[in-house]
Image 1 (cartoon, rainbow, N blue to C red):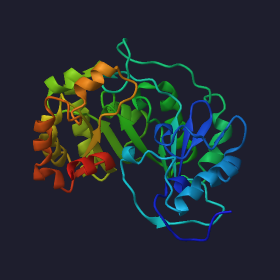
Image 2 (image 1 turned 30 degrees about the horizontal axis):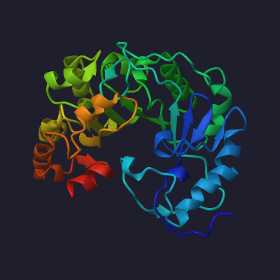
Image 3 (image 1 turned 90 degrees about the vertical axis):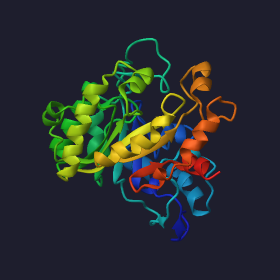
Image 4 (image 1 turned 135 degrees about the vertical axis):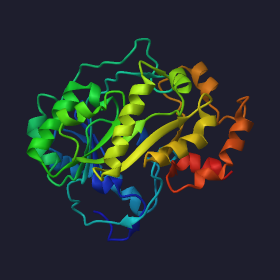
Length: 327
């Protein structure tokens, strides 16, 4: 049984569900929670999973401040407080679908792949999703249709967006994209213009020459044209939240202050993330890992972080970077 109501630290296990392409259900990103699913849609209904024993067991840790399952350093939002719910938790307000990890770009710090893009045509839920949607989205307000691949590159993800728009017209979308295909035409085709709660663009640079060092298969000019279109939608109040992501590394760290200024002009929040040691070659990681005291440019990086511009209202850093800046 869940303990009686008290202040807790994180509301994600009570408000969010993450659906993987093999049917596994998580509360948060699998990488951030030790790949510990609370159930699988091929074995149980979503209702059974959401208030099942594994889900309750996961939630219990938050009542005593025990976060042994979570990788808190990776939490973008950091720790926040909320009030615990009753024993039977209402269906999630936020639902994430990760059922296509295909991507049209190769980022040097993301995935180690020799091809120009990554395509994974294995969609185990695609034929069954109709039978799950009503149960999963009963209480949903926001849907993230893809966080592991490129939203606008995947026909399957686009079909999912259209399906949800038709059946659940009040639901808003939170979109994560590299921006290359996020054109006005794409917004129109998917009827997204008035349905976006948050738009997050992985950009990582202010200048094309820096961008081209890190991104294979991209087009900086095209991305910036699309970003300016999103900026226009934000200023017209058609996008509630607009974030530009920046994974900090040895190639781009000197552009961090300019990135904050550029984001401000675009009406966006500059979100800085640390380089993660996963899915990339070790030699590449060591070359890019500016956070290491052994890196030849580490001292210069620390000087950059002392810039007061990082206290700007439109600047956001994840938990790791926030602590790093305060050292």
